[in-house]
Length: 398
Image 1 (cartoon, helix red, strand yellow):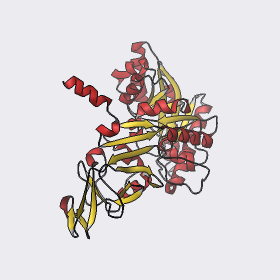
Image 2 (cartoon, one colour; image 1 turned 90 degrees about the vertical axis):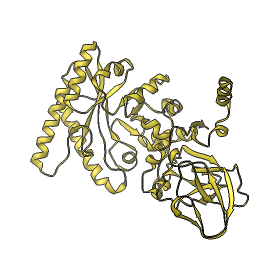
Image 3 (cartoon, rainbow, N blue to C red; image 1 turned 180 degrees about the vertical axis):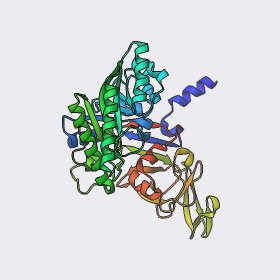
Image 4 (cartoon, rainbow, N blue to C red; image 1 turned 45 degrees about the horizontal axis):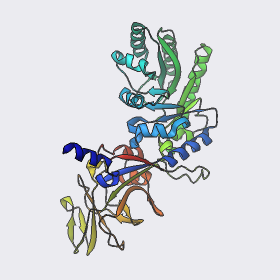
């Protein structure tokens, strides 16, 4: 009997068997790819960043949908690259993070490109590649101001110290270039700026990166791909494109409105939906949810919605947030529970059991987008998108 039930369950529509589901718009993904191309022109390559399950959008489905719109894919960990290859994604893939040397046979067998953060790391990979009788394709990472991964190359104020740092970094890359068993395909850096406030710091990092590239050219070390720009730099920082851009947020349309760039038409690809599971009318001065944080001050109609922090919804600072029901904003009332939240639908005529509720996305002419949610929760749009847990299925829609 369990086999028959399992098959029946498998065949049911996603909306029927799941309390919460995410719809990923293929047309938005393709539109956003076109917008990126419009910005960077025909000669710069696009690396679609699909780490963290494509920012919560489903890495395999996104890679398939974008197709030739992306020239390269970027992942954070080897496991993410293996998942793509296991699903017949044959596009070039760069692994940003460290991969243990004993797993290098997998990297090379799957024709992946590995980031190198230091000469020591490169030497480990070189030795392993020689043992395996193979060559490893790499991109070298420079730390020009992020303070995270890569060969240290901060533009520090003490000019003598900076020159020494610059010289040491150049020598380290030169040593990597002489290692056998390694093919250097690219070099890149990561800008720490995430908004317009830090644009001067981003420019400083880019100057350092450009100076270093000139030095590499003088030393006859060439790179097919030189890249620094993510979404922020692509949109806001002049001369940041080089040979490739690494785009995550722009690909998914996780962007604030840009009134200074009306020609750009990015659209959020993610919509998270659920349905109203209970409706009741409560008298005034009634507590709603845990700890008495929510109070219905007057007689109200309260909708219980089956999504909570176990689905990835942030439970803090919810007093000014809302969901969309019948194309209208329904304020959340009380704390978010593990599996539920409550919303005040007193002002929404006809709100009833089974109504669709949109957590993020568009419903009729109203919308609640990730940047807005992020500002309400004092976090980032990307962090909200990636919070979606495994019990929230993702389906590709047009």
